[in-house]
Image 1 (cartoon, one colour):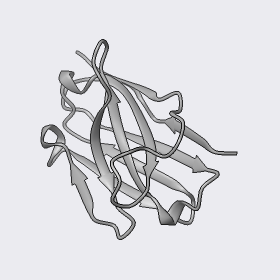
Image 2 (cartoon, rainbow, N blue to C red):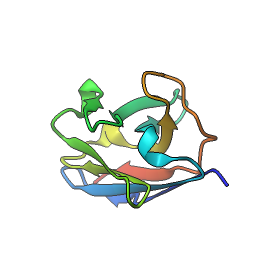
Image 3 (cartoon, one colour):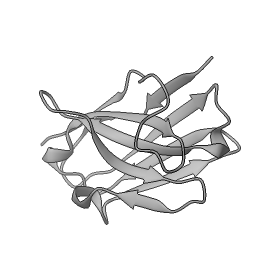
Image 4 (tube, one colour):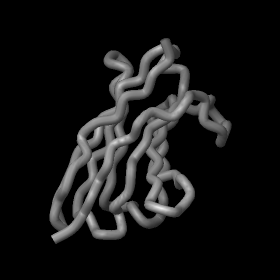
Length: 119
């Protein structure tokens, strides 16, 4: 069964940190790029970070230097370490898998995990 399960969100003060996790099942995980997306209320879902099959990483300009994406192919899991969080990072965060070279996601979206940055 193909499934995406995101976790690790929560309420954090500005400047704080969170580590998101996403467990992926139902695909041959090492053969896919994986990525994190965010969706703020009333806005479209946007790419935050992507890690390709070979390990190279790509980040949205808004999170460069603050967020780090990583993957564990043995555990079919992708992580997003979020440091120096800002109120504008508040959103629901989702993960998904993509075929290498494609910009289209391959799997049905999961529930996401809510990140709220507020004092």
